[in-house]
Image 1 (spheres, rainbow, N blue to C red):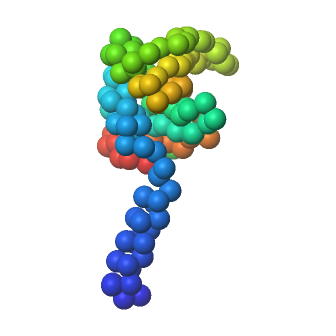
Image 2 (cartoon, helix red, strand yellow):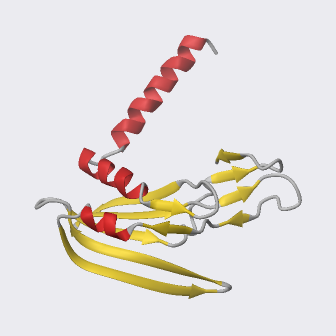
Length: 154
């Protein structure tokens, strides 16, 4: 396949990808600011998110992705990342908070918790935010750990 054809395909893919992203700039900026508030306790981590427009406004879920072992005796094993999260700075990103809830959902061998905030970033920007203690089941690994200890994006 000629190189110019591959380059054209790449440009087309980027254009289609940008067309699919319907998030307004203010929401992209909010997600970036909120993602900065995660503090992994053991090592580096990648923030994952799910973003949906509902009849009541935007709904965003943020979480730290899992690390998957690649190669070696633990190949395929996944581990969640322990973290702290700066709730006070998160609250400062909202102009109005209508609901603030923390929940715990015990599971076999571990516990998942979440923080849910409903409010507004501005008069016309309603938002429901979930900070999840664990990634959703359908989320793939965020990082791969090689047998030599190197971490790579998944």
